[in-house]
Image 1 (cartoon, helix red, strand yellow):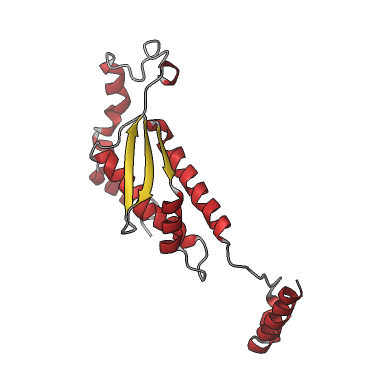
Image 2 (cartoon, one colour):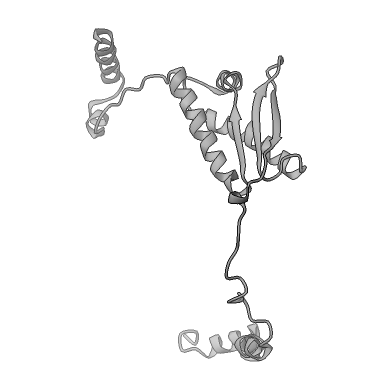
Length: 187
């Protein structure tokens, strides 16, 4: 604990040597950061995966990373200078993009689980497992026939509502003519 306070005192001394008192007086506080630990970074990876799973929830797709894949991700993405920011971008670029490609190629469909692991070359491997459908997860849509979103039989109402768009009074020429007749434009 003594070394931490010594580091803070040394840092404050260095800051005072480098910056003018006028500048330091404008600062509310000086904040000291510590590098993130591996456990904290692993927690961040899990939080990012939960966020990704939320986006895939509607399609009933779940994902999990093996410990080996998490370690590989941390090794490839973590930079102590930038903290956890590159981690989020890395996951988006290499995990989310690959999952999107699998969905587009129809290799990953609804009601699936994806396990992400790494091979001997530290490349990601996506293992897709189709899950059994249960009747409780089946969606039902009630009330669709009760109230249509748009009444297509009543063309007369539609024509009346938008007929003013076709009239000549809204044409660019008519607008220009009205502007020229305006008292403000005559000056």
